[in-house]
Amino acid sequence: YQFALNSPSDSLKAQYFSTLSENLYKTGDSTLFRKVNKLAITLNQKQNDSLSIGNRYWDLALFFDRYSVKDSAYYSYSEAQKVFETIKEEQLSNRMYLAMAEIQSKIKDYVGSETTITRAIEFFKPKGDNLLLYYSYNILGVSLGGLGEVEKSQTYYNEALYYLKQATFDKVLEAKIINNIGVVFRENKQYKKAIQNFKTVLETDSLEIKNPDLYAKALSNLASSKLYNNDTLGINKLLLEAIKIKRSENNTSSLAGSYFNYAEYKAYALDTLEAIKNAKIAEELSIKSDNNERLLDVWPFLATLEKKNAPNYFQKYIQLDDSLQKEERKLQDKFARIR
Image (cartoon, rainbow, N blue to C red; front, side, top):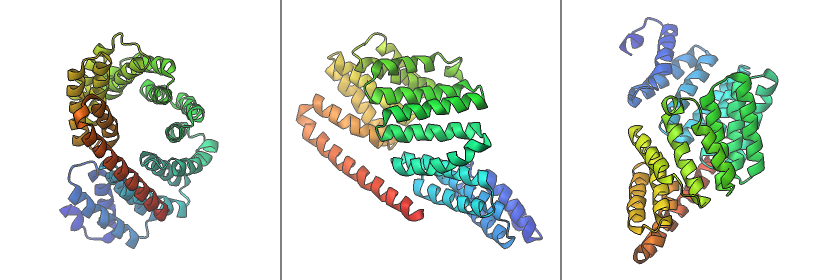
């Protein structure tokens, strides 16, 4: 940083600060990154280097994305997109649309996400960008699943799989899509289809080594699908293995889901004390990891098990649900203003 700061010319400074910005967002020094990134943008503006300006906004977007500051990430991707579009860097411009659509999907702006990603697909398709088409159709699958459009969601996931196979033989990415399709099946009570998908994921060669997080998610997903289908055979083993892996991976948010599934299983087995105990672990982990969606599952569940505390759990549920809906609306409005 000091070396770059003391460089003899603005063009060298712009070059050095660009290199620093490109790499610093991955480190834990957020204060230094913000300082470096701001200088990089300013210096490149003086040099009229639009490509570098767009890339520095991209660095900033990735930084905010890493820390889940969704509105700032979206804004920075949007700024980068405008710069890339102005200088006719069409592929980079459309990659920004892809990133923006993914964030929109995360805040449940599914309609907005669908509109944004369609723009990118219109560009990627004639160019034959198979890997980017895979990512694009995966986001479309998530968005349509969120809108409850099961058949369309499945169609888009299958499109994603098609383009993935044109681009690469990456079995882990393929397993991710198959897992996503399984989740859509499970959420729409097509449990037998969901079970088959999650089994396919778990059969992926060396998945537990290549991507232990996905492997553990598939274990939990298989267990919950079997439970909802009134088949308890092997569930205990599946969930305990998922919990063990998620603990070793320190995946607190996902771990909350496995403990909740374990609580559901114990309640199904009429072991109320164990069900309450595991549900409370899920509650604690959800709060710790800001997994609000899981809390909306845990509190009504606990209310059915602890009748005397039911009013308290329902009150917390109503407050959180109302708060999340307001926050989502606020973010969606903010994104619309940015656009």
